[in-house]
Length: 149
Image (cartoon, rainbow, N blue to C red; front, top):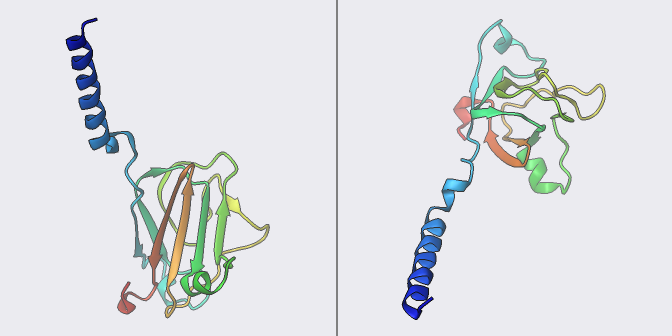
């Protein structure tokens, strides 16, 4: 090869590398977006006991491997916060776009045998921690809509 051809190939590789670098988001999956809303079906909003009628929804189908709900103040003060609700899946969770707080999710089981979702305090702030394969996401929420985010 002549010197001119080597320079042209090097220039083409350099331009190709710059294009890949600038468009590297083509090769990554979009982040998981989580939202929550309240359900008022079955009269559950007026009950003082049991989990709150809170629905979590995702921007796409997820095959969940771990779900945890933890109080934010517990995360800030403890190295190992106590989850109020913790589900795990070994391998067979069903892809889902959302779930209700405290519900049984097909293919998942409580992390600790016999545990159930704890009631949520309207004055506290909570964090939902999700794992779906290699993806991790979190979402802070309150169950009192008047308290703000």
